Image 1 (spheres, rainbow, N blue to C red):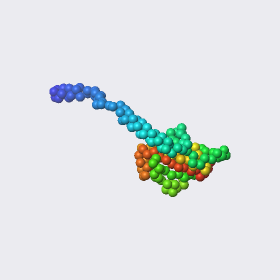
Image 2 (cartoon, rainbow, N blue to C red):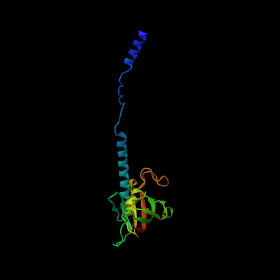
Image 3 (cartoon, one colour):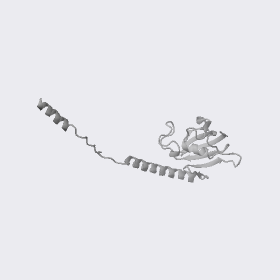
Image 4 (spheres, one colour):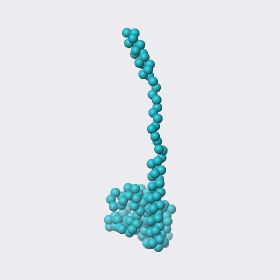
Length: 177
């Protein structure tokens, strides 16, 4: 019986070792992010060059927005009584979507007349920011780099991944909130 107790005590003492922490095998910190940043810089530079080339060919008075897209007024109204939309205003508008080579992706008939409550609903970034520049009755053509349009995913229908777009937008009315 003494041998059994001694054996149990020995087992108990040796089985109470503290666990040792596992060391990481190998960690490359930020490698995926660094690669993604480089890929996006190259994509952005390529799109920028393509858009600048298009702007030179068209010879229109495009304006560069602070948000990173370009636009020109097809129809501009110099009426001071008209204002641009504010947060919560309902904007009624029509637009079409083209690729940079001018190929129609969605016509105004495809997209129908839209109502958008400013900054309270989902809308791709470039168009949301572009509507803020417009007044009732104006028509503007926008050139959006892919990051201001549908980005990496596209619209999962007709607009592919990383596709810059041209949109011609007309505001029919702005209803104040």
